[in-house]
Length: 92
Image 1 (cartoon, rainbow, N blue to C red):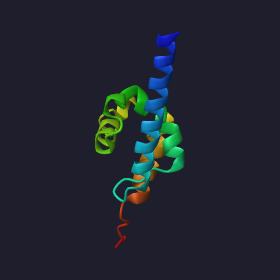
Image 2 (image 1 turned 180 degrees about the horizontal axis):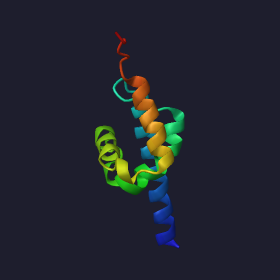
Image 3 (image 1 turned 90 degrees about the vertical axis):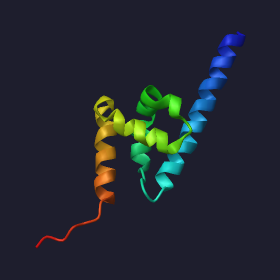
């Protein structure tokens, strides 16, 4: 029972830390994630980058490093969010 309780508390703490880290990422001027990206990528971040939580730059780097391993939904929304943040270049 104690092992189960400890595991549950650890998972809840990781979820809270990840939520805080992703919230900070979404408010960062350099890399803002939409609420949809947060929702679509939370599982991937836990699966691929849990050792980096709550280090925001490390999570971001890890997600880019493992881009090929991201779920299709996460990869799609991250790509869309990043493209939206790129400065628009005027066509000549």
